[in-house]
Length: 279
Ligand SMILES: [Zn+2]
Image 1 (cartoon, rainbow, N blue to C red):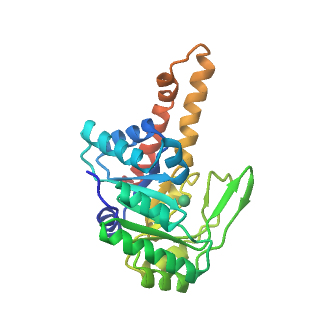
Image 2 (image 1 turned 180 degrees about the vertical axis):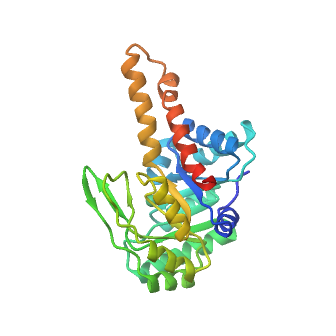
C-alpha cells in the first residue's frame, strides 16, 4: 500500500524505533527493497533523488514502477514514495503531481528566512494532496573524491522557528553526519539530537546513515532520530557482489545475471539495517 510518511513515522517515534529510507536507482533495487521489507514485515520509505529520477526516465516512471511492483508482488507493508533532496518548489510539485506520497525540500543552502518561505510553498501544495513534507536545516557534510566537508550543525532556535513557521511533517537537522561513506570518526552531536527531539513533536531524520555502525545508529535512535536514510551502504554492498561475479565470470553478458549478482549482498545489508529495530 502506497502511503504518505506521516503515520509510519509518528508510530515509529512513539515506539522509539526507526523507519528506514533506502534510495532506489533502478527497477531491480526497488523490487529487492520491497521484497525484503515485505518479508520482514517492516514499513519502508523508498527515497529517489532527482538524479535517479532523470536516470530512470522521469517522475511518472518511478510512480508507475513502484505501484506496479506493489501490485504484482502482493506487497502488503506500508510503502512511502519519497523525493529525496528536492532542490526546488517546482521539483516537489512535479513529484506530488506524479503521485509521490512524500517530498523533501532541501533549501538548506539558502538563508533561514528564504528556506522558510520556499518550504511553506511546498507544504501548502503538499497538504492539499495529503503528501508529507520533510525539510533540511543547517548544512550536511559531504564527501567527494576524498575531499570532505563536515558542514554546519543546526542551531536549536533556528530549528524551532523553522518547524513552527513551516508546519513540515519531519525535519532533518545537520547533526554531524555526512553523505557518502566516510572512513573516520564522525563527531555526531547526540545532545543536539536529544535537545531538538525534546523540543518538537515531529520526527527527526538522519541523513548520511551509511558507513555508521549499528551501535551508532542505535544511539541516534535512542537520542531521538526516527528516520534513517541509507544509500551508499547499499551501493557499496551491491557493487562488491557484482565485481566479484564479473571477475569470476569473464564471459557473462546477460544483464539480468550481472545486475542480480549483487542481490544477495544488497539484501543482507538491508536486513542488517532493519534488524537494528529488533536489537
Ligand atoms: Zn541526504
